Amino acid sequence: MTRRRAPRDFGRLPLPGTNVPGSVAFTPDGGALTYLYSADDSLVRSLWRHDLVTGERRELASPLPETTSEAAIERGEQLRRERSGTSELGVTSYAWASAAREATLLVPMAGRLFVGIGDESVRGVHPIPGVAEASGARLSPDGRLISYTSGGNLHVVGVHGGAPTRLTDDGGPGVANGVPDFIAAEELDRLRGAWWSSDSRSIAFARVDDRVVPAVDIVPAGVDHAAELHRYPFAGGPNAEVSLHVAGLGGADPAAVRLEMAADDYLARVLTHPAGGWLVATLPRDQRSLTWHRVAADGSARILWREEADPWINLDDDTRILSDGRILRSSERGGFRHLELRRAEGDVERVLTRGEWVVTGVAGLADARGEVLFTATRDGVLERHLYAIPLDAAEPVSDPERLTAEAGWHDVVASRDGQRWIETWSDL
Image 1 (cartoon, rainbow, N blue to C red):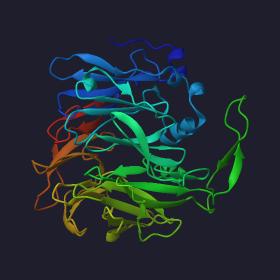
Image 2 (image 1 turned 90 degrees about the vertical axis):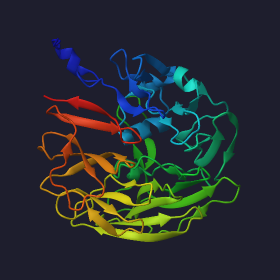
Image 3 (image 1 turned 30 degrees about the vertical axis):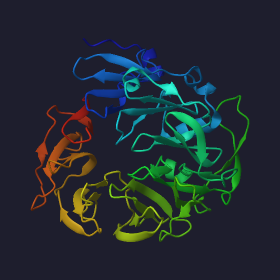
Image 4 (image 1 turned 45 degrees about the vertical axis):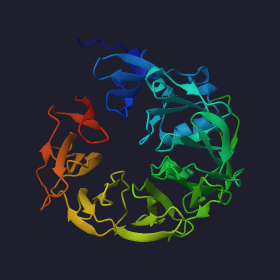
């Protein structure tokens, strides 16, 4: 039944119709969904689990009191929320370990870390003692360790607790390890600053030195705020110096990665490679090319390929690495964004899609089935639908198989094996 809306409904957040489950994901065993949701139609969210067999819904993590109002949140966290466009409160993120022997769940909240392991991940989470003021927390793929930044330095702690290990020691005023720089978060949509290797034995991380950026006084909105000193990268002025480093867990000093990039180039994308190491993209300040590197666990790097565009490169999050090392990419070389498959060494193997429509996102890979799931404007620019094509198609596909039925807008999250998907659907 349609409910009549009063004017006051449009003067508060969340707006009518926008309180829907967010950050939806399949649990590692595929038997349940997890998502963030506000049961009282407010901005304050909890983490929920929905069993796909029984239909049972259970709250796994509830908000801490200090996360239920913007005024109570620490200033540094408020700035990170602004850069990521986060307006929700309470539990705002979570993650599952991708290759753990037993289900392992991480919930960062108010600078603390909460975990659920095995049966706990079905019942709820508990805090890791001795961790405070943590940001940028990331679970290792095997679910044994968590990396996080505190005091500008990168740390690692076990999911069962114990004394954290500090991996860097140069963090402090103006220098931070394991977090994104201002431009990466604000302009490049890169909100991460640390990436585990696939074997959970090393971490690639960004080192951000913004001491070269001029400091300016900025007065936040609100009558009770005093001026704050921020290092703001003005157009044409110096940017923060950002470099990529690799730290092993054996106690050796982190190694700087020698990427072929200028001092003011951007670290645009970093992906964990299933065969070890990372796939890294750098972007020059004129943003007219994108250079992809293969980085090894010892910090050595080599260029695989370079993409160029005029007047600029539009960054995307469509890159996926197949189990055999081949790389799925999207490209605007033909005027419309389409999918292509590259060999492990970077050269193009085949173009997968074509036509006067654009691929808007890769939803997932059905690697074993040899298919890619993606969203596109194939059926009109006012709609988004999910499509599937084979990775070994002999010719580019102009009329892909459409998997969503209802007219309107479909946002899709696929399961890890690409066999199922979750969609959030809306229409006018």
